[in-house]
Image (cartoon, rainbow, N blue to C red):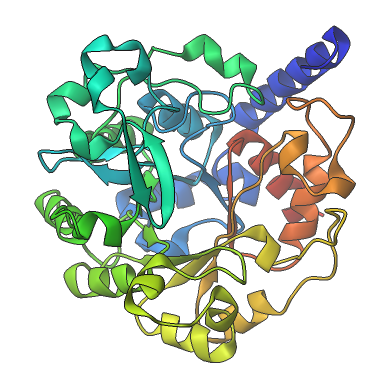
Length: 387
C-alpha cells in the first residue's frame, strides 16, 4: 500500500472521474441529438454499427469500483455511461446452468473458502493444461452457488472494492438477460452485453457444452439474431465457428499473446499460433465466421523490454481490410496495469497517466476498448473525439 497522501489523491481522482463521467456520459459524448437517441432506443440500436466509436466496454462491469461480474458492477457501468457491459464470463454449474464468473475456479472471486460445508469440494484440476487448485463451478449446483457471495478478485490493487465484499451473489446468464431488458426499459436506451464463453473445450469434455447452452437461452429470450444486442466472444476459434452455426449474433474471436496457441488448437494438433491468426490469411479466415477480434493491447502496440510502448503494428489496418472490428483489452487506471511510460509513482492502487494511454491506443484506429473504469474511458473518448 502507498502513503496516506497518495491514497487520498487517488481516491479524490476516482471521485472526480466518476462525477464527471456520470454527468457527461452517453450520446452527448459524440454529439448525438435527443431525437437521435430516442430513435436509437426505439429501433434497438440497429446492430453493432450503431455503437459509438471508439466503443467503451465495461470490463466485467465497472470492475475498477465493484467486485467483478456482479449486478452491482454491471449496473454501475451503465450508470457511468458504458456503451456495452461485459456481462458474463460464462461457466456452467453441475446442473447445467450458465453463471457469470471470470473463471470456473471461484476461490478468488467468492467467499466459498468461508463455507465449511464446501471444504471437501476443493480440488486440483488441469484447466487448459494448467494445474489449478480451488473450487470449481462445475462441482456445485446452482442452488449451492447461490449461497455464496462475490468478493474483490485483486484486493491489493483495489482495496476500496473490498468494502462491497459479500453484497452480491453470483448471477446466472438468464438473470443477466432479464436485467438487460429491465435496464433497457428503465433507461429508454438499448443496453448491450458482451458475454464470453470460458474454456469451451474443457467443458465440452465434461458433457457441459457451452455453445448449445447459450444458444438455447438466447433463443428463448429472442436474442439470437443478427441485430440482437448481445455480442459473444471466445478465445477458442472453433467455439466461435460452432456458435456461427447456432446463432446469428455478432461474434468475436479473442486473441492473446503472439506466441500463444488457442487451447482448442492445442487439443486438435493445429500448430498455428496467434501470430499466424493475425496475418492477413488468418484474419480473412476469422472474417468468414466472425465479425471482430478482441485482442490484447500488446498486439496493437507492442512494448519494449522495459514495458514502454513502441511502434503500432499493422493489425488495425489489416483487420479493417477484411471487415473485422477490433475491441482490444484491457485498459485499467492503476499503475501496474499501464505501460511503463504512463505510470506515476509506485503504489499498486495509485492511478497513472491513463488518459495518455487511451490517447495512444485510440490513435491507432481501434473500434473500441475494454476498460475496468468506464467513466475514465468515456472522458478519454470525449478528449479524443473533440481533439
